[in-house]
Structure formats: structure tokens, C-alpha cells
Amino acid sequence: MRKLLPILFFLTLLFSCKQEAEKKLPRIAIAGLGIESSTFSPALTHEEAFHAKIGDSIFARYPFMALDSTLRKRADWVPTLVGKSLPGGTVTREAYESLVAQTLQLLEENKPYDGLFFDIHGAMSVVGLDDPEGDLIKRIRDVVGTDVLVSTSMDLHGNVSERLAEHSDLITCYRMAPHEDATESRRRAMQNLVDRLENGKGKPQYKAWIPVPILLPGEKTSTRVEPGKSLYAQVPGVANQEGVVDAAIWIGYAWADEPRNHAVVMVTGDDKEKVVAGAEKLAESFWGVRKEFEFVAPTKSYEEALELALTSDKKPFMLSDMGDNPTAGGAGDVTWTLTELLKRDEFHEPGGKSLIYASIPGPELVEQALEVGVGGKVSAPVGATIDNRFAPPLLLAGEVTAIKKGDVHAETEVVVKVGNASVIVTKKRKPYHNESDFTALDLDPRNTDIVVVKIGYLVPELYNMRGDWIMALTPGGVDQDLERLGHKRIIRPMFPLDADMEHPDLSARLLRASDQLD
Image: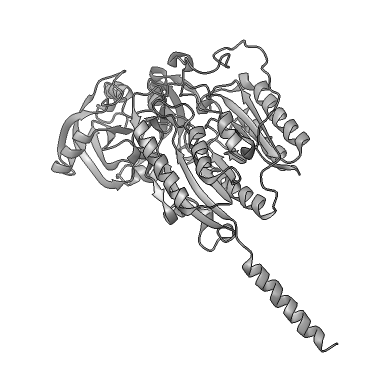
């Protein structure tokens, strides 16, 4: 018998290893479309703006999903189609339907699935269609089935309609603005999905959804400062409880006019008491500090902001041209601010203030620049081909000091020197977020007096580079003055448009599980 024991032990070990090797990995699809769309901008977004990736190329979007990563090995991942666009105007119905059709076809061809990672932004608007993300997830469900576990990852400036919430089994969003935790949030969404499939718990038993009647721009709700900092600091305390899968607060998207545009709190999990109490705590906390939200930086009219910049001795003094911010959904081609800047003598006098303006689309000028080359002279209209409500196209004349081809967004970038001002002109619109965006064009932002960027709050790299900073209340499709925009379809009352509204009902609404929907 003693001689048999080692043999039995070996056979048991061999059988165990075989079982482990034969253990079936969960099969998880990846799909999603993402954009922030301003319905107050005349711009339209077309299919090519999404730069859709198909198949294994999608993995490059997720640094934590390298081939040898633990998370990659824990499932049989089936990437289908993921398309992400710069923020912009409303998406054409043709573009949306084309991208959706491609997604559904790929999902159909590769099914069945145990799970699906739904990677979206959450603020997409489509011509003639309310709640596109809710529509998309419902149509995906029609293909993959209601038993599939869906984990949704979003921007905190997205909108969570009841339909999107019901069809999502797991759901989360960023906890930082600026979004320094975007990668971490997507990883959390995937991790939660794999965990629930591996442990057999599947769909959480409870999903608490609370619409909060607050509509604020991102520039007032940064988590760098109070009260956003302390508000979002409460989220992990709710999410990390035993019996809770995740918790999230959505600020919502202020520059679209649909019934779903408002803040939302959601908590998911298996402990009803903790899920409900956690959601209601976060919602009440949000409501309680609603009047404390202010712009994340000093905010002035354009005239006042420019005077501060001109009198400052700190370099670079960064001025945010907020109204036409392409990273919030502006057309990016409003010429009003640049026109006003170039009227100032300070940017034309010898030894006057130096200026970098980033940026303005001007494909005709770009073509001229390519013909004459660096050192040549150009004169052509720029901007206002899409949004000319505030100023017409600007005739820009000057010397070409740099040309760069191949940018994924701009395609071609040109720097035109006009007096002491260096104006970046692009073939297509592009936001300028990194120091390398400037230095690649032989510009030196750190030693420039004033740098104007079409942006709201500064992204981390620009924020760390600033000498001083102010946000200018300029006109455009993402005007920070929400009352001036004129929402007509959002649910009222809504703070701050109805500043004296009564305390809303912030009790948790427990939603149906996705496999219980009609």
C-alpha cells in the first residue's frame, strides 16, 4: 500500500493538472463607440472621425491587456469593433448606422459569448435619435442575448439613461477629472467582468440608479478642487464594501439637449441594503454641495482675461479659449478669439508680447504652405467653415515657420508667423494637450508670453507647464454660460437653471436585471 501512495498522489496531481488545463475560459467580446457631441454646435461628425479599429488591433487601446498580461490570459477575448472620436458635433445617422451594423455583424459572426465589455464615452448624440448608447446596447443585446454579462465603462461626463443602466449588468466611470484614471477605470470594468464570470456570481442582484437633477459643465466639476475632490473621494468607500461590486457618479454632459442630460449615481452589488444606502448617500452628498461648484480656475470675459495675460510676467500665461473647445464638442473653427487677438498692437510691435495660438483649421492655407514651403509667405482664409455664427473666416497672412505631416487628427499642421504671434493652422481640427505638440512644430511654449489653447480646464501636462492660467468666457458651441445656450428638452426643474428648485426625490430606483427586460 505504501508503494502505491506515491503513484496515487502522482495520478491525482496529473488529473488535477489536466482538469485545470481543460477548464474553459470565459469568452468575452469587446465593442463600443465613443464621442462627446454638442447639439449646440452646427458641426456634424462623420464615420471617419471614429477611427474604428477591428479585431486584435483593439488591444492596443488597453495597455494592461498585453499578450502576456494576467487579465488577457484569464479569458478568451473577442475584440469586434471599437471606435472613438474627438468630441464634436452631432453624429450623422448614416455614420452611426454604418458603425452599428459593422459591430453587430462582427458580434454575430463570433458568438456565443459569456460576457461583453462595452467601451463607450456616454455623450454621443445622433441625428434623429435620442439616447444612442441605450439604443446601441439594446441592439447588441438582441444579437448576443440577455444572459451575457455586460460590463460598461464610461466617462464621468457621459449620460446614463435608464435603458443603458438596465441593459448593463456592471457599470462604472472615471473618478477623476481631468481623466487621469481613464485606463484604470477600463481595467476595473474588465476586472469586475472576469471576476463575476470566474466566481459564478454573474449578474449582480441589485442595481441602484438615481437621476440627480444637476447639469454642470466639466470646467466647474474638476476633482482637483473642492467640492468635486471630496465628493469623488467618497466613491471608493461605497464601492469597496463587501457585497458591492462598484459605485459611480456621473456629472453628465451639459452641451446636449436631451432628456437624459443630467447627473446620475449608480451602485451595483448583491447586498441590497449596502447598494441602496451607498447610492442614496452619494446622491445626497452631490445634491448637498451643488451650490459650491465653481470654475476650476479664475474665469473672466475675454477682454478681462487678455488684460491679465498681457500684464503678467509669468511664462507661459495660458489662456483657455473655452467656447470653442474641441475636446468638449466645439467645432474648433470659431475665429472670434483669434480675430480679436490679432487686432492687438502688442502682438505686432517689435519686442512686444509673444503669442502662440493653438489652433484653427484652414485647409486652403495649408495647401498654400505646402506649395511655398518653410520660409514662404501665405495669405488665405482660415476657420468659420462650420461655425461662422460669431465671426467670419479670417484672412491670415504671414510667414510659414514650420510644416508637419502625419498627425492622426490634424493630418497636416502649419505654423504661420504674424508679427509676434505664431498661429497653428491645421488641415483638420486638433486639440493641443502636450508640450510635444508644440515643440514638434519648433515652438517653445515655456518661453512664450501667452499661449492660447482651445480647451477648458488644462489637461495635466499643460497645467504643470503653466506660469499662470485663466479661462476666458468666449463664444462657441460649448459656451460655459448654460443659460445662454437655451436648453429646451432637458427635464426640468434642473439645477442651476432652476436655482431655487425644491429638494428632489433622491431615493434609489432598483432596476430590472438585463435578463428580466421585456
